[in-house]
Length: 112
Length: 111
Image (cartoon, rainbow over all chains, first blue to last red; front, side, top):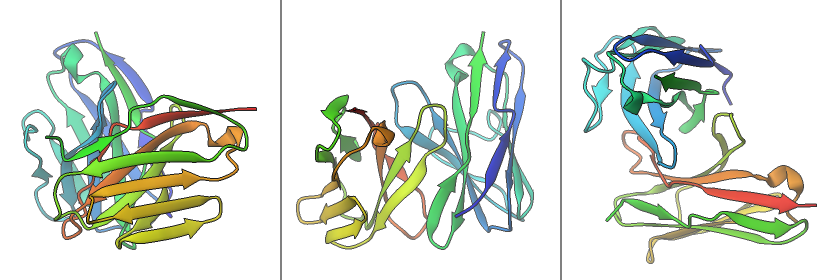
């Protein structure tokens, strides 16, 4: 398995502002992922973040809105930029280890 | 057509019941199949992972895959109140490890 932490666990933000979410894993992993879980919707992949390369974004997600950093093999950040109420969601990071994906506890974001 | 459809629930059963959770998928390119359990306000936890048709058993849990019908199931035997959670099916084409999830089924096991 993997021990994954996320900061913050929750936040309430004003529209037009940005929030950076941190994801820390207990040991080195090559692949990290960021997902969004909106109320009543499927868990949806935002992007894949590999160390040393640009993140790869899924259809419907763009770098200007969700910039991602991956400075080393145990850490990544996701920024939600210029937020609107539609960005209210749970954001989760996950890591790939032994061909299995393990998830962090999530960050619950509310945008007013 | 969505890539994966999951029985929406919610499902409420008495303790000790056998629970059946089901998903269908549309693309035969999907080769890897997972079930996650998510407790309220927690991240998903991997329960079962399989890549072949047939059954895979782990304790009270059995994952079943029928690739010809594009149908996957999770069976829980002797269900316990601690099994109360949302169950998510997830599928992957494998090569890029990207997961596509169902919407989840909320299960409540009543003592």
